Structure formats: structure tokens, C-alpha cells
Length: 158
Length: 158
DNA sequence: TAAAATTGTTAGCCTAGGCTAAACTATTTG
DNA sequence: CAAATAGTTTAGCCTAGGCTAACAATTTTA
Ligand SMILES: [Mn+2]
Ligand SMILES: [Mn+2]
Ligand SMILES: [Mn+2]
Ligand SMILES: [Mn+2]
Image (cartoon, rainbow over all chains, first blue to last red; front, side):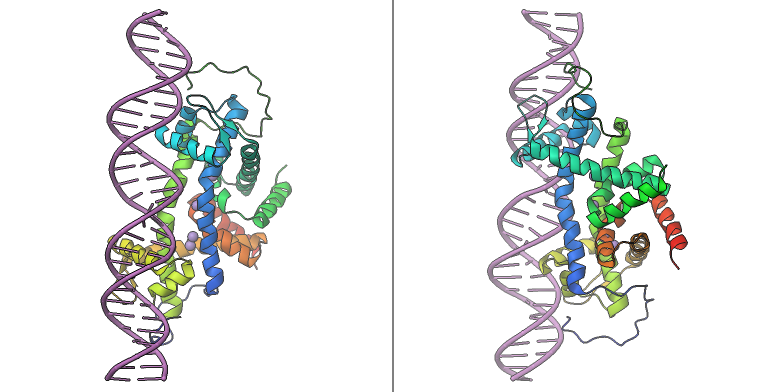
């Protein structure tokens, strides 16, 4: 890999448990994370819009901004992106609607989010902490892990 | 919240499990995720550099690039940032060293990464999948959840 | 030891996702 | 029904983190 002469064997630093994974596999790990980061904010917006519609009857930019903790300008710009992606429809100064693609994404994201949240609760994590952790973790959980979490919930919830 | 007249009650959409969290708490969820995203790439680089030094005796930009799956230019730019942050020392065209702050960060990140990885393994997730999921999840796991994961590992590993 | 190959750096470009300030539109109120 | 308030959009700015292409330095090899 390196063009340079290798230093003497038996490094002075303590060797932690596992060996490094093969280069290709290691790169795929980070690539998967980068890809998740491209889509997660979109998923969070769409999921939130779906939740606002379900729980409040409508999704308005101001409510999205206060729930996301960002400025209204940021939300406005994001709505344009969601529109270009075919996930929402919007008219200027009016509230938002999900397209059918948007509804699908909201449903899938919400289902996954709920599994992760309920898994953490079943593990014994405090509700507030579980909600915080789930908000980030949900985008990095494979289908395989998700299925295992679901089974764990079934086994450990009355 | 909204200036607009509320639409009729009893929305037509199915109400999924939980109610929306209070606005302030909800915003803090997303803020925590945004903050994690500011630091996670730094942590991954520092952790990888520490691993390369531990397992290979040195950390070279080319090896970082191939393991991260990014271009060498990207790594070079990132190394400058790590330098500015006081996490690594480097001389042009030479391999990298962690400062003591860098070693601390590498140690903490590696320990957390290992707990998340071993937790997923203990749950029954396939090793390759567990490594991919852990690479992303690790940055979104609170200390509280981490402690619970550690206890789970102790209880479920021979 | 000169040439080739590899590794590292720099410059310039791009997108995503934040922000503030200012302008515009809609709704509510006096 | 006009003024005040609330909500939305736009413009312009910024940083992080990717990329490619060109160049510079080092190491390896013929
Ligand atoms: Mn989320
Ligand atoms: Mn890590
Ligand atoms: Mn990671
Ligand atoms: Mn993340």
C-alpha cells in the first residue's frame, strides 16, 4: 500500500481488539455513512411534515422551523428542494402537502424511526434520551439490524 | 403557532403511535444530530489514524484515502483541518502523528466504536453489517445508551 | 543514478445546509 | 377596513466536504 519502508515490527502502541478490515470493506463502511448523510435530512423533513399533517391537520413552514430548530429561511429553501425531488407540493404562502412519493417516504421513515425508538426503550433507555439517540441512529440502521430490533421489541415488551 | 385558521378537527390521516414531543424537546433532538454531524468525520479520521499507527506503525495520507474511499486531495485538505484543530502534527510529505489531544480523541472514539460494534454482534447482527451500522450509529449514541449496551454485551457474551 | 512510479499538495469548482436582513403576503385586530 | 402582526420568500453570505487536474516531492526500480 505504502511506498515507504515499513518501520520495525511490534509497534509500541497497544493493539486494540480487532484487526483492520480489508481496505475495500473498510471504504464501503464510510461510503455507506456518506450516502446516509445525503438522504437523512430529506427523510427527517418528510417524516416531520407527515407527522404535522397527521397530528395537526396541516404542515406550515413556521412550525417546521420551530420543531427543527432552524430559521424559516432554511426551511423555505429546503421546501424548494423537496418540491424539486417530487416529495411535496406547495403554493406560495400556503401549507404543504406530500405527494404520493412523499407519503411513501414518510411512512417508511416513520416506521423505521418507531422501531429504533421502541428498541431503545425496550433496552431500558430513558424516553428523552431514546428520542434523541433514535433521531440520529435511525439513518444508520440496516434492514437486517432493524429486523433484529423488531424481534427484540416483541420479546421484551408486554 | 400558526396564524392561520385551524382546519376541522379529526384529521382523515391515521394517527401513528406517539404524539409529537413538545416543540423545545423536538428541536433539541435535531440540534443534537446536527452537532454530531459536525464532529463525526473528525472523529473517524482521528480514530483511523490511531488505528493505522497501532496496526501498521504509521499513518500515511494515501492509506487514509483508500480506507476512507475518498480522493487524496480530500484527505490532504482534511489533514490541514486536523492540524488546525490541534489533533495531529504533520510535515509535508511525511506521515502523521497524533497530538495528545488526538490520542485522547482516538481512544475515546475507538472505545465507543467497539462497544457499539460488539453490541450489534451480541444482538446477532452479521459481522459485516454490524461494522457498517456501527460506523454510522456510533456518533449518535448517548453515554446512557452506551452504558446499557456495555451491560448487554457483558450479559450476552461468553 | 536517471527514469518511472507513487505519494502528497494546491487550485479551482461544486453542492448541501446553515445564517441574517429585507421584502413581500396573508391574517388578525382596533 | 386600515394598521399591525405573523408568516413566507428571496438575496447574499458562510463553512464543510466532496471532486478533478496540474504540479511537486519522494521512493523505487531499471
Ligand atoms: Mn432522524
Ligand atoms: Mn468510529
Ligand atoms: Mn464512524
Ligand atoms: Mn449521522
